[in-house]
Amino acid sequence: MDATPSTGAHPMIRLSGVGKTYDDGTVAVQELDLEVARGELVCLVGPSGCGKSTTLKMINRLIEPSTGRIEIDGEDVTAKDPVQLRRSIGYVIQQVGLFPHQRILANVMTVPLLYGESKAIARERGRELLDLVGLDPATYADRYPHQLSGGQQQRVGVARALAAHPPVLLMDEPFGAVDPVVRTRLQDEFLRLHDELGVTVVFVTHDIDEAVRLGDRVAVFAAGGRLAQFDTPARLLGRPADDFVAEFVGSTSGLRRLTVTPLDPAHLEPLDGVRGGDLGDAVGLDISLGDALAVLLRDDRGMIGVRDGARFVGVLTPNGVHQALRAALAEMDASA
Ligand SMILES: Nc1ncnc2c1ncn2[C@@H]1O[C@H](COP(=O)(O)OP(=O)(O)OP(=O)(O)O)[C@@H](O)[C@H]1O
Image (tube, rainbow, N blue to C red; front, side):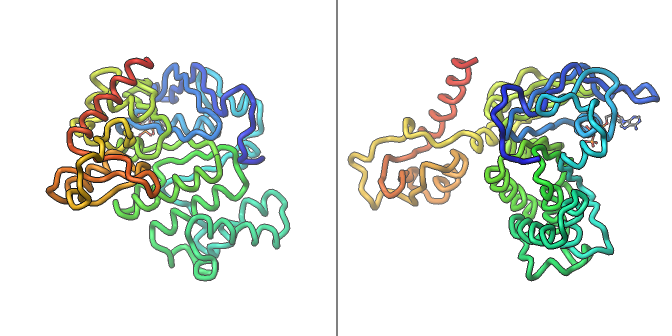
């Protein structure tokens, strides 16, 4: 299968009325409706035990749903052979699960070989993928997993999951075990990779910051697998659906909103009368309000220049930051 999004009318993943009750009576997920568009990156987030992993594992049938229907690209997954299904869906977990006695390249080549590719092609594809996830094949291809750091092992896990060009990639807390600095780097790299490949991703995390940073949309789960809100990061933070979501996104949601609100020329002040020397650092229009505010706070002039390419387009002041946040909420309300 190919990761290139096709143009069919149905979503890439559709869960309708899906529920899971384990044999001991635990209701892990109930009546879940969720649609993931082609090429979308959706994060499932929520407190421990709220059914995120169960939901993910039902998509590739590691767990069979008790009720409801799951479709991938319009096809009912229960009608497919589970082994074939799992080969066509990439799966990355926190405990990377690399084969310890195989070298890194061999680990990544596993899936293409399973698909019957020749060794030469699988090797070439493996090297390409290592490169894609930021591991120089000349350095890492012949190492064993224990000779890599935790973050590097996670990258190999991602490379291996992408080896079969899966149209769908499921990720369960893939960056949970690495330190915050490495985690941020892996998130950045993964966002770039997602843009490049257009693969549809469902990503489980318990970290709301990770969810709003990565997700095109974020599904917040409450206990018992209840979907409390499924929305864009900006709406989730700006207009939480209920008290549970408000509490989950937390008291720092104002700060988080800065990271998901773009810098908008409408909230800049004109350059008139401002001399070059009055301006602190200049930032580009393509950054978030949060990054712009960080630059604004770095010096005490209270304003920074904003460029669109090489051209100065205005000045951002603290008042402009407030205006942008207020306007983003007003826009959301108008479109609701
Ligand atoms: N095999 C099982 N048998 C019985 N109950 C289970 C089983 N697997 C999971 N559960 C229960 O189902 C609920 C949902 O578990 P799940 O692993 O999906 O949650 P989660 O949101 O992914 O949690 P975490 O963030 O802690 O990984 C929990 O109450 C869990 O104890």
